[in-house]
Length: 223
Figure 1 (cartoon, rainbow, N blue to C red):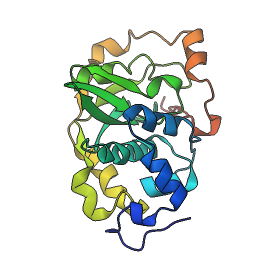
Figure 2 (tube, helix red, strand yellow):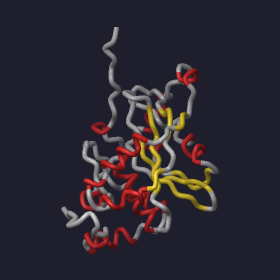
Figure 3 (cartoon, rainbow, N blue to C red):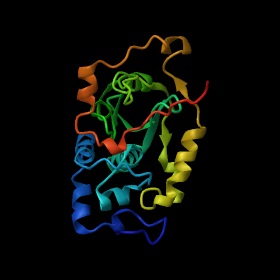
Figure 4 (cartoon, rainbow, N blue to C red):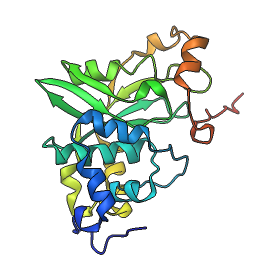
């Protein structure tokens, strides 16, 4: 595996010829998404920097979001990520790398679920983009679990930690994600009335999912 010699080392300096060619081929948001779609989903707890996503060819949603932000940056977009948040104990969060074209938002994402990946840049606001994920954001119990989202976080402020080339640069990003403001997508009174995901949609969303990477909701022992 390629490993950085310094947190300030550029990504390109650490790639072999094949990896440089692969990175150069990611010439659009859709091409970045296609690369992530061919990258197996990682069920590991480890968070990989973009360099190690290229080296290991596996990624989970945080890895994929960071990789996509890096690749979008190479195309001239700021490296922006948004975190989609469930109720604690119900589901995993989900990280999007977002971009704008013609004044509208789109997203690139790695997911174990079919419906939580790419979005064309046709959404007029960040909230509108986020809400396009609502129906497909469900857990193994078929409960719709999206509850909030963060504002866009510019990863450029973490460049001093070498997040593109060093796994050790990721914890400061994760820490900041837990600290920034959260915008709710449903009010408390709405949650009890949410329907379960229908069987056909459930099965479609789980196509090719890695079972080892699926979140298992915590069972309460109270009462």
